[in-house]
Image (cartoon, rainbow, N blue to C red):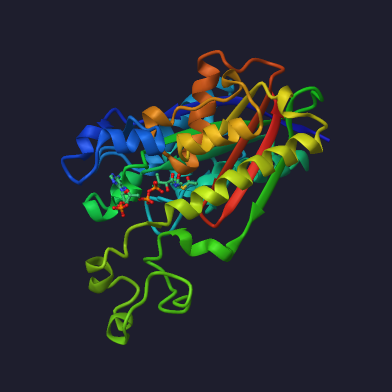
Length: 349
Ligand code: ACO
């Protein structure tokens, strides 16, 4: 059976650096609060009009494709993970196909938020293993800066997120000593409303007993995008941070251990763990729980914030560019986020 290797990897982050101090111009926050709670020092924001989730994905993809030694014409399939698409529909996959002048290949969008890239990688891996495709472009990209509440009301969410894109070319190989060993996907919809953006959506008050976005009849007649919704800031993401934190620190180690046990490894065998860059405190907790040394974990949230579906490929790309990942290394990717969904992938580089 063919296996999948990461044949090329690329990343793109916008030029515009936004420091914690820059945010204090818009909301009541401080560099000290943000660094202490999240580890974030700065993030990048895309150009308001000239950059989109897809344009950033194009830049990351060009690098991944070139490093894989192929051309855009050789790509057989696209899997695109994002929660901040250019349009509500169609998804970013087709926009990427168009922008890169690819053949009329299949393009699939994945809606799994923070674990979106690991889910996308797993989907692509199955297509390679069955022999259906040889080169799949797997992308995670986000333009969060366009949809955050920059007033003090939204500070618990808006300080965390940043923009960027990462991409890999997943390629078929017959080399049994390399490639993706296994992927592990999970979800628990019980807490779907704990970290969510409810609108625009078709829910009206259907989930009102569970969620935080309820409307009166007059407002509902205005659905699915109403003035009331905007007045009540219900067009912005909602997050119960402490709830997310508690679940993340359980599920991250669990799904990493699952991948290790499946392949008869222990945490000592990990060369590099790339955790989704949710929050430095979560990553540090996971490191401690798995008894990993500093050099076994790569974090870069300090400079990019949480880029959701883009965070794993951006961190993977940066770690590889810095020479921290070499051929033969055991690399573990892991993510947890909205849904809740969580996932891991274990690979021999
Ligand atoms: N600046 C200053 N004060 C703030 C800010 C801010 N940006 N945000 C919230 N506060 C205040 C709150 O208003 C509150 O004030 P109060 O005590 O007067 O009411 C106080 O700080 C504490 O608020 P909490 O929400 O309880 O803060 P907490 O200590 O839990 O930290 C945080 C918030 C950082 C979000 C934390 O809950 C966390 O790390 N959660 C994990 C969630 C996460 O990492 N999400 C990332 C996205 S999801 C993902 O990728 C998995």
